[in-house]
Every structure is written in C-alpha cells, then in structure tokens.
Image (cartoon, rainbow over all chains, first blue to last red):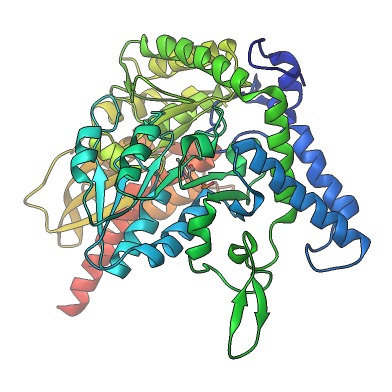
Length: 414
Length: 149
Ligand SMILES: Cc1ncc(COP(=O)(O)O)c(C=O)c1O
C-alpha cells in the first residue's frame, strides 16, 4: 500500500495487490469488479485483523477480567476510536456500532421517532432514497399517525430545493436524506439542507452509505445530527455499520433494542440504562467485524480520502464520457455533482440480459432497481444497469466495460 | 459456455418481436406472474374449450429470456390439451433446472430446446420459468373454478 496526502497520485498497481479478490478470472477473463456500491472488496489488512481476532483474541467484550477478553475489548474499542477520528466526531460515545446502514436507520427512525414525532407531525425524506431510508420512516409514521413527505427530483436526478423549502413547516420533526444516491450517484447539497433545517431546529439524518467510500466526511463540519453507513461498502466486512449521533439527541432518545450490555442495573422493578454508546448496543456485538471496520478505516486514512476523491472524480468523468457516448445508451442520473455510480439503460435491452452478458466478459455490474423503486418509477424504467466504482478501479477497466457493452449490442443486433 | 448458446437467435428474435403479445378480451382464463427480484411482470391469457387450449396471449415486461420464453410458450400451447400442457410444464422445468434424466433429451422438444442452455445460468432460471409458473397458476385457477362449479 502506498501512503498519500491528497496531492500525489494513487499507486494503483500496489493498491490493487492489497485486494486478493480482485486478482482472479471470471469466465476466463480478468475480473473487472464494478459492483462496489453493493459490496466493495476487502483488503488483506482487514482480513488479517479479523483473522487475528479469531486466532488469538476471541472472547466476549466488556465481560471478562481474563486476558483474552481484555484484548478483545481493547481491539473492539480501539476500532470505535478509529471510526470517531475518521468521521471527525467530537467524542467516542457518539459512535454506535450497528449491523449496517439499514440497522442504523431503523434505530434512528424508531428511537428518534418515539422522542420527536406525534400524530399530525411530518417527516421529510427524498425521492431518491434507498428502501432502507424509506420503509423505517414509513412504518414509524404509520405507528405515530404522522405524515411522510418526499422531496422531489428533476430529470438530472437532483433534489428540488425550492420544493424542500416549501415543505418545511412547524410540524416537520425529522429530515432524513442520502448524502449520495446509490441509484443515481447524485451528491446531495446536504450542507444547504442542514442549514435550512437547523433554522427551524429540525434534526437531519444523513444516509452516508454511498458517500463514505468516496469522499472525506467530517460530521462536525457537516453539522448533521446523525450519520449512518455500512462497513461492507467501505472495504470492511459485512454485518457491521455505524450510527453517529450528536450526544444531545442520543441521550434523550429511548433505547432501541434491549438486553445485555446496554443496561447499568436490572431489577424486576426497574432497569437503568448504560451510558452512551452502550445504551444502544444490546447483546454480544459482531466483534470481529468491528475490528475489521477499524482496519478498513485505518487503511482508507493511509491511502488518503482526498487522494481517493480526486482520483475517482477523474475516473468517473472518463467513464461518463466513454459510456455516455455509446449509441443507444442513456445515462440515468446526470447530476452536476456525482460520485461513484453510473446508471444506464440501453434501448430495447433489459438490464438482466446486460448483466449476464457482461458477467461472461468478466465484468461484474448490477442490474435491477437497486432498492430504489421510486427512482425507477420517476425515470419510467423497471430497472437500470449500474456500474459502481471504487478507488482501485482503472481506466482500463472502464474500457473493458465499454467493450463488453459492445458485445451486448452485437448479440442483440438484427 | 458461449453466450450465443444462451442468447440464440430464436430467443433474441422472440424477445424483440414477441408473438401473441397484447390483451386478449376473448380469453376465459388468465393469471399474473411477477418476479420481485427483477421486476419482470407477465399477464397470461388462455382460451380453453373442452379441455383444449385454443388461444393464448400475454402482456408484460421483462428481460429477453422471460419475454422469449412467454412468447414461445404461447405458440407451443395452442391446440394442446390441459394434460399435455401440464406435461410440457414438467418437462420444461426439468430441462432448465438441469434435473432431466439421462433419457430426457431435447431433440424432440421443438423450439423449447433453445432454452436448454439456461441451466448453466442459475441466476436466470427464474426468468425462463416465470411464464410457465404463470401458466400453471392459470390452470390451477381453472381447476378451482371447475371444482366449485
Ligand atoms: C444509500 C444506501 N443506503 C442504505 C443502504 C443499506 O445498506 P445495508 O444493506 O448495508 O444495510 C444501501 C445499500 O445498498 C445504500 O446504498
């Protein structure tokens, strides 16, 4: 691996060697992995950290005086500190381990909803949300008799901020939007959203699942009230994610799940809850995955998020031009500010056929609605093909994709 | 496996120009099929007289495999008895899932043989069978109505 400070270029050859899964053939061709928005590949540093836990330190956390339990607890808590530093949170108590972005969103929707939302109140999301940032709010609104309102988008795949402004009123209790859209790649103007929301004292939840692998995120600088993401989309393991929340909210919010670890004392009459962050972490966590996430964050810090961001911007520009100029290809989502994702349709050819044919060319992409059916409905398509990038992807891989799309068109030509 | 074996010309042709496509007001049975994973949708229409399928039609949207499968199926079904149609379903199903016995060659399977390559693509088997499962539901519905009559 190569260390960068934001100015030098990434050494892709060296970086790619860190990712064992990238070095393989599919259908007799070198793998071109372009499904990073679904799950990114894992560097050996992360794999090693998790393996070390299972080989040497495997024990429960916070529960034993013995050596292994102490080592496990130390590694587990060290990872939390690494995450805190990585996203610029003011204190480690604001970093809650979850199973992933979905779990984090369920936690906030449930618990913040209980704190803030009553009958007749309103919650605002956007038309480009992943289902995991729609359904938990929808269910919570149903339970509490509240109304879910949706910020509309335009044909480029950008939020209509004027509509958003008009939507806010004295019943708006929570706003939850994607930092970056997984279906369109749009980077949303979250600073403006947060500024306007805070004028009315409305807390803002950001779904950062697709932002955090591509850009430098500082939660204090953004001034968001909550920020959620998943480990497996940022080169860490599956089964782990983070909910960042400002202490002022987390302290007032009721617990979500309950059980061991999240309590201070229990009698049959009364339970007092543990301090942050443990109040929201019931039961034995995914210890190895938390340690793996710590390693992923360390890895990303060494590569340098600024380097990653500028490299990926060039790569995305290159890919947008290359794919966008193929005949009959229509890009879905052409926002001015984008990261990581190119969604497209080809006239007369279904994304699942495209996916199968690309796969036989060694190119892994995703075809489908990307858990964002309202986005598909807006663009009047049933599905798109999505190529999603990580910092280890190369221009040559983009060329392979373009070549493979040519194969698709050839097979379907008359 | 060569992609051409999966996307044979017949499949591409039927996917681009599906036969028996469109609503069919004169049908007396229909059923809907949906694959939530990929969003493929089909509505299948049958006209059944004296246990014989006399007319067929379908509507919907889907990938080339599912569209071609529906198109070719509706062609094959015309003139078949219910029992023959059920036997076709069984045979098609075992062909695409790869569970066909050694004597289950596809030589006499007519156009349906073009789908024999699907078994190499487990993720796509559901595309090929969507229309056929919908057929079975339409026939079951007929059984149900027959029973209550
Ligand atoms: C924008 C966005 N939010 C949330 C999620 C849910 O993440 P997970 O499935 O890891 O919980 C995803 C995953 O695709 C996503 O892209």
